[in-house]
Image: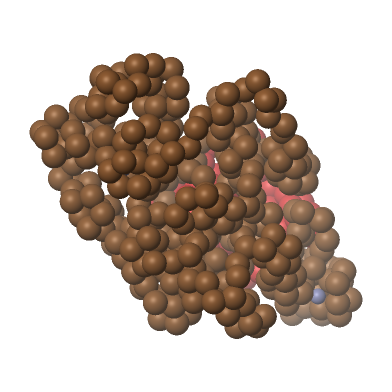
Length: 346
Length: 99
Ligand SMILES: [Zn+2]
Ligand SMILES: [Zn+2]
């Protein structure tokens, strides 16, 4: 082996196990296969195509919003979906949908990335602001309530923002960039919290089919490692994740299949009929899915608009209590507390 | 030994927000080759300015940090035992951040 060859590849002469021609450049965590870059791009994209086809994620002619945060997952998702849509004639109308919380300086970098994606992939971009959706920017909310409680608002408003934005865009579905690592992490957290309702929801590849905007996760079986290696994965850094995520990475190192195994076991959870599942209805005010008379966002907004910002936070008796005395014991406001700011929602 | 080190995915925040570092690693007396094991501890001492636990765990990188040596997954070249040569490019990307 001459010198230049040694420089480009330290794996020696190990060949790609797919094409047997080029040198291997990465080890797939899912299969432990050692493959070259070209074969990696091909299998990466085709596997996602298979997931889309096998799970009937899209129908021809549908308008699909891609939840675009400017992060690596949604950037790669936007690219891969637009590519597969062309290559396999899905016949989809794709849109990028971004949320601007209205926090000074916070979204500048990520909105720049999303605008770049709009140009690069030729996908129309819609940015919806909290001001449009709720009448309040996050900065205004913080001014009103102080920093202490803003995680409650942040979590509830963020959860609904993409759905409300997708409704504004009149899209049929919302596709999000949640990957296999995200889903394994959420399954673990829901098991640890004993949250059966969320556990069964978070393993489904499509959720909210009975609601106005179903959500789907084309990257459900795609490892984060591969998304990071994928070339258009240029992103601005975000907050570091918590212990469950780190635990998953530890498991992956010991046993790369672990991430898929967790997803499999999450899927196999059978919910006994004696477990009372919360009823899903819709908010009387805005029509968003809610098990209460008003959804959480509407309760919080009512408080803000009436100048009682603590309304709906924690155990403060809120508007729904007249109708529903044991709200705190059901999946009412209590759950908000178990969700940290910035955790993933399904 | 001249090497190019690249930090991404948030790891650059641990080294004064500089993504690319051109470094010159001097081998200690008695050492004949530079392995990734040696390089990592050198980086920890000389490049990482804060929260080294975000970069390393034990004598290796923290799980969730991807390592590419000359654009090739280090899992193929022996991870810590990978031997480095003059002008090699080593990339570290953290995947432990929001998407
Ligand atoms: Zn190949
Ligand atoms: Zn509502």
